[in-house]
Length: 543
Ligand code: NM2
Image 1 (tube, rainbow, N blue to C red):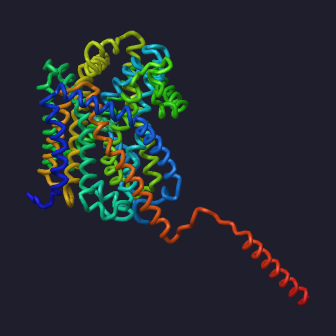
Image 2 (cartoon, rainbow, N blue to C red; image 1 turned 60 degrees about the vertical axis):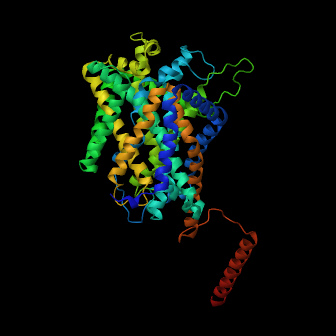
Image 3 (spheres, helix red, strand yellow; image 1 turned 135 degrees about the vertical axis):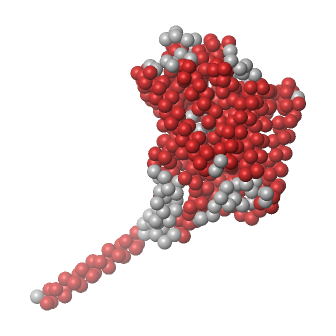
């Protein structure tokens, strides 16, 4: 066991902050919940606008970069070939950014919007029906994927262009902070990033586990209580641990492949055997609705709540702000991964590819799974919303699946898919957490270090499930993500600074501004005229 490799200040810093949040919550759940709710209100109430500005600015910035000179920079040398073909690249980046939560939300997000729509629309009205399938796609769409892409810019740039392998976020901001990175500030940045990721993974695991427990309950009859959930979570960690010991790469690779094909199978099954036309039409119509209302959705904060006859719905805080925060906490981590697989592509290809393929993937899940449930609701086959209110969202999810043909097979398959998703979340998150607390990573982070963080990751979601309702789970991402907002700013600045410096210094750089010097033009024209006249004179003389 090589303990010297560990960057102890970061290691203990992250652990302390995790324990400092989890233990009081577990010991004093009631007052803990109050404090969590206050923290949530404080951040979303006062800084909600900051998150929405951040989302829109990120999207606009990436579109700008991809069509600028910086976007033409190739990640690698002249001869570097693409490491992966486009299909596997897209599948890998989607799998890295998405976990079990997409199963949860794709199935049930519409039901929340149907009941509590935005823009002062009445719940369960005809208008609410239109927004219900669209809003989920928006929250998992191009702006969300843009948030994921932002950190991959500096990381890929340093990795392939400046050839400095970066596995730490603090290293990726070195162009801006310089030597300050070697002071405790560097450790603080890494600890805050780790805390953000643990918060985000906390939300994922605390949402995914009860859903799996419900699936298990449906199959075996085991009660979906806290004990079952704890066992499930530990089991997922154990699956990861075993696969990681059985020749790391292979184990997880097999799991991810199974995952991909299983997901494709379930989606195709619902699409073909479910209401195919309804699914296609609703998805396509949602696409238009989002395009038409893109800016409205991206900026809606209900500033007039509780004044002038407007009632407060809390929709922006509960959804858009929450989502941007949740994507944000995962972003540096996904950025590390996307950067690693993008050798040989240009920055433009990396940006547009992530946004487009990522969104397409989300559209498949939300369009197919969500609209199947919506169909059951609207045709009166099954009152999903009523059932969800009576029981729980996860019970409603399993009940929707039970309406599928061959439900006896489909529910277990869905549950297995969710379990693998959860295990791969443990795998990838623990990889990054372990890498960040090491001074140096040779090929892989140390095994004990990875396992340590995988089990540590269980802590927060366990406490959250014990304490909380949905709002508490959402808060974990929002509050832990707040500092990451500023780290993202540093990362962006750092990329622009480094790439602009290099662009200006490179051999075939041409400044983009064209400077017109009238005097020079006139002089040159006059000179040309004189030359021509002289030539003519000499020709005349010869003839
Ligand atoms: N995001 C995509 O569980 C998961 O799907 C992880 C969640 C940020 C909403 C990512």
